[in-house]
Image (cartoon, rainbow, N blue to C red; front, side, top):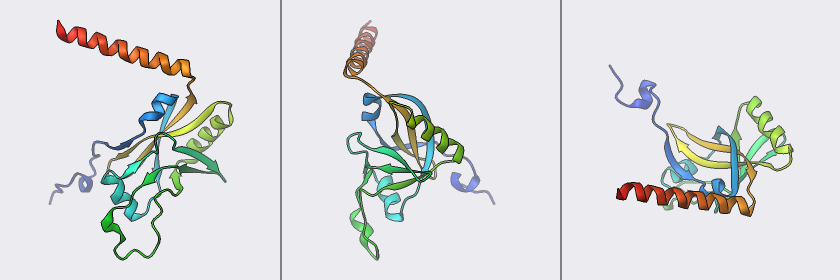
Length: 165
């Protein structure tokens, strides 16, 4: 008997982008990326897959406490149908623990202690399991943001010129 479901056959699914933190790439230079698991409750998984998660306008961040990494300011809006039979309160803006290997955790924590670095969530992806893409980032100054916008506009204009030919 062969399995028709890719999750049952052991084949990896293509990653599906569930939510993206677009402000992170605007406000920070992303120097390194890491993928981490995230501890969620059942109703949160359903809500995230239904598109009810957001990074609060780019203000979500990762905090290191007690040798663990925590994701702050990720809002998961509960679905209307998820309150049936639920005995605990649903908290849309609670802290969620990130699941990283010790080596990755220590590396990120060491870099954050350096001046100017932070860890920001870049996206939520689904490949049979929900994962968070984290970026080791350094803040952009206003002039850097202006240069990025100018470069993007110039690139857009050249693409228009090439299409018109």
